[in-house]
Image (cartoon, rainbow, N blue to C red; front, side, top):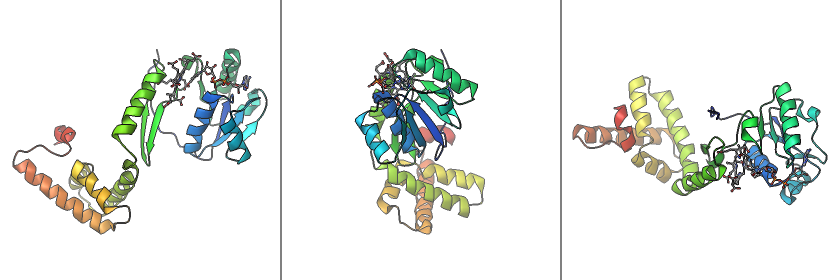
Length: 234
Ligand SMILES: C[C@@]1(CC(=O)O)C2=NC(=C\c3[nH]c(c(CCC(=O)O)c3CC(=O)O)Cc3[nH]c(c(CC(=O)O)c3CCC(=O)O)/C=C3\N/C(=C\2)[C@@H](CCC(=O)O)[C@]3(C)CC(=O)O)/[C@H]1CCC(=O)O
Ligand SMILES: NC(=O)c1ccc[n+]([C@@H]2O[C@H](COP(=O)([O-])OP(=O)(O)OC[C@H]3O[C@@H](n4cnc5c(N)ncnc54)[C@H](O)[C@@H]3O)[C@@H](O)[C@H]2O)c1
């Protein structure tokens, strides 16, 4: 059993090679495109959607069997053919070149595994069962998608601006930390939604200070903080 280390990779514009052109390859290519990668699919056959992406220039497609030199200059590789021997061989070639590779039919044979992903703008949920049960990862990600709907996308964008404002305007570290915790409480999140993405930085900061003062008041009266999970910070 492998204990994986989760990361958020910057792969925009980087060459990512997917071997195979079936449903699994399509899913990996879709995830890579979401992150702006330069995707090359190498496979004798492609799904209709992969064909469309190739025709539209969204991906590069080489309609043939995968070969070792496809890996030259790659940042990531995915061995997602339906041929276990081909996947294993391509994974070995990737490793020789120092290219991290995932293996679709045998997670343990690769350097990394793909999580189930839910994107809400800057907010990204990635769930992994470390190869124990991809369907469980997919199910739990589905639950997160229901709990955290599309409204969390713009909300994260507003929070990014609030945070920039606080970092620029509040020199005291403890004060900053207190404000930035208040900025992710239920009341603040509702406020960022209400004010929308175009509110002036000074307005956002003024609202945040007011909310922090209300919170101080609650704390003074012995009432629970917002959000409740932050109790252990204070
Ligand atoms: C999460 C997700 C992300 C993605 O692919 O982008 C993903 N698999 C998904 C779906 C899925 N995959 C499979 C089923 C059928 C049910 C079942 O078999 O359980 C379903 C469910 C479905 O289709 O609904 C079959 C399967 N998958 C792997 C093997 C081989 C093996 O176990 O080693 C086999 C058997 C093949 C065979 O029998 O021939 C291997 C891997 N699949 C992984 C990721 C990595 C581990 C992640 C983890 O454990 O968390 C890993 C190790 C490598 C990798 O691919 O990175 C995506 C859900 C996306 C979403 O819907 O949100
Ligand atoms: N990791 C996962 O999420 C997951 C999920 C389901 C299945 N699987 C495994 O992944 C494999 C692929 O699944 P699929 O549904 O996409 O299969 P598929 O049969 O739909 O597609 C396989 C693709 O690989 C291509 N191919 C075959 N040999 C090749 C080679 N040497 N080089 C390049 N391309 C080659 C085929 O032309 C085809 O396009 C399955 O065999 C299964 O073992 C993995």
